[in-house]
Image (cartoon, rainbow, N blue to C red):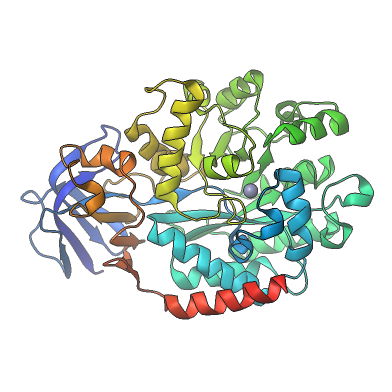
Length: 452
Ligand code: ZN
């Protein structure tokens, strides 16, 4: 099996149990797994492939994105939805999304994956919950596998249309029996529960206002009948979401989640901006995870999630850029910086989140939320997912006394190198697995078609 040596790393951020930050660091990779971590003199001096970073790069574990809707790259900055809150924004976009096809799902997934990879993401979860025309989750899975991102594909769903009191138009909802059947098919066809898996399946009914309590329960039962299938949905995103829950179910979102069996270590909820204290305690006790999406929450004026409080109650928290119709960028480094700034302004406390804590959310936090013990930190036996960023950039000027904090305090938009499962997917700032200009052109053509 081929070996890869990364040496003369200015600062190697391991995120291991001791949070070692190694000067003049090195990594030895065999095939797709890290074999040794240490200083450059401690490690072997040769390998089949050697990347000498000449003391000018910081290396970190690859970042983990825990919430996204890849298809939404096709509907960024749509004029009619630019200034809407969550429910109005959704109602403006549902009819446009009803025109999605197999081809547009495929191309937008590659576009989103490429943008994520350039911003340091090496593992992403995506939530596809609308399947108009000939589109399937298979389109997205194939697309992402081709660009080489480690992927957790969510079989999302909507089953309660407007005529049944839900938010989406009836034309974009599916029958619950069809949803469950397709969920089972996808699990059996694609889910890989082995260590270093590049593809896992998640079941993800979209939100309390677009599926029934029955579908929530039955999805949980189905997921729990297979090893390693996790559950994901949107929860407590804004005030209207809370009102819907109280009016329709007579329960807060936290109580609703518990009533349908959606708490536990195999569950994570996106947003949780308006989660109350009781639910935070419950999530902490049960290990129920949260995908924090600060840019989207600001963009839609949903509010600021109580992340400091969640961390203090030991709630597992990861970061999500959320769909590109509500961010409208898939930049995970930027999301970590935004989470850091938002925590401080929410608490009016300049120590509410440190830069290193923000990096932990983006790595260890995301890995925990996705139920992975093979990514999130760099140590022997872990998957070879890591990123390198040149410290000679203008953004780092004057901050080299603490390049790790500078990753968050200073705005860093992209990585120079990214390795996923031992494969170099970003080389000197360029994606190696696909021709990006062609992809952008095709993507823009499809986006134009969708809107006209
Ligand atoms: Zn979302």
